[in-house]
Amino acid sequence: MLQVAPEVNRQEDARPKSVLIADSPEVRADDVLVGGSNSAFALPVRVCLERGYGSRVWDESGREYLDFLLASGPLILGHAHPRVYDAVARQLSKGSVFHTLNRPALELASRLAEIPGCVEMVRFASTGTEATLHAVRLARAYTGRDKVLIFAGSYHGSHDLSIIGYRGAARAQSGGVPRSAIEDTVVARFNDISSVEASFAVHGSSLAAVLVEPQQRSRDPSPEFLPRLAQLCRSAGVVLIFDEVLTGFRLAFGGAQEYYGVEPDVVCYGKIVGGGFPLSAVGGRCEIMCLADPARASASTFVHISGTLSGNPVSAVAGLATLAELEEPGVYEHLHKLGERLRTGLAGQLSAHGIGGSVIGSGPIAAVEFSDPAGPRSALALREAVNRELILQGVLAQLQTRFYISLVHTEAEIDFAIDAFGAALGAAIQRLCAADRPLAV
Image 1: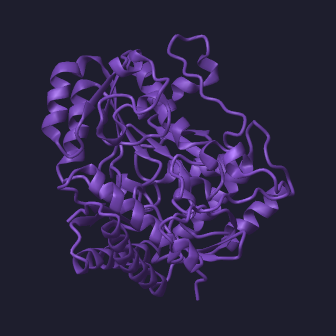
Image 2: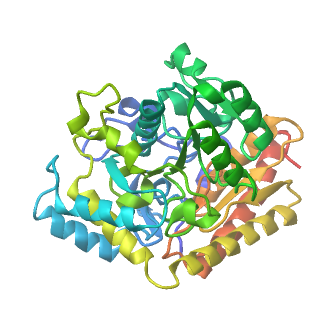
Image 3: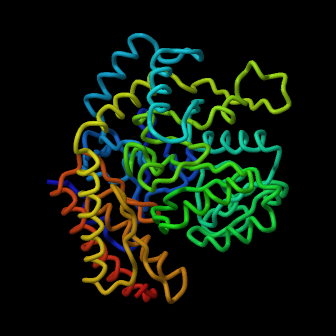
């Protein structure tokens, strides 16, 4: 039985208390962590997590939550999976980082190159942001061009290029982004191939790359979108980069390349590939990837890709153990079954409560989008209220991103989350109506 937050936290005027940092009772999270959080997406109820196992996490007060955050997605096997735990423990006894060639990194790179698709050679990094940044730099060096086409509403990490166009705007969504980065970025619309064709007509000869999430923010591409995008890139000599930081090993073992049947020139992996430890990878065709070879350092096209923790053996063995588990028979059939069950249930709750919106995603992903005829503030207010109520129901999720499903979630837990979402909708509607706030309908 989940132990949820006490009823007192449901009071309209009760502000969640800051969690005291362990061993420093006078110091609060807000005083030392910017925004009191490790992420740009702070939870609406302050929760300081202490441990996790399987599909569950516990906070410092001992409250238990069903976890659909899964550390923003890498834990597709759940928390502290025995196979990953054992592999990491064995490696830690041998050493944690060497900053040079090591057997686990070599084995993981070999495994990635064996998967059908574009990967012939690999270079490791530590984060998804680094992977997409390096991929774009390789494309620019390979083509001798500067401009990059991205899609409105996409997210590729927190470097300058990614921040442009994020949340649908054709401008930087963060301070500190130089005007030159904006000028070299072309923004088209996902699933609107005519907007891509128009961009190619104007900028095709100066485009180095198209950087795309093959499933953008949980939304599947139309059947013709990715094939036509690949065709346009080939015709114009533009490098097609798939950002599979999220979709890699999640939709299928071969990621979006396998799931949608389209092969890019370069692919970026993150999250699952490190098994819950810091690791990302850029992989692609040899003629592009070899530009990062240090033996070419004197060439004008040499691309510097390096990092102290890149390809560290602890992350590599965690990744290898995770991939080995995902290769077991029936894994993806089970993940897709759970995802379909959750999406169907969430959509049913929207309908039952008379709330306009949709549930999108495929595989072990579900995302809720509220319609907002009264304006964006209407849907935003409802989303924030439901997020808060879900936590009070004992479910960790963020509607602004998605529900992540792991291999260890059970059908009973999926049903619990569906019921909790329905209860959260009801409580949020009551709260907003009492505050005389408009609702998405």
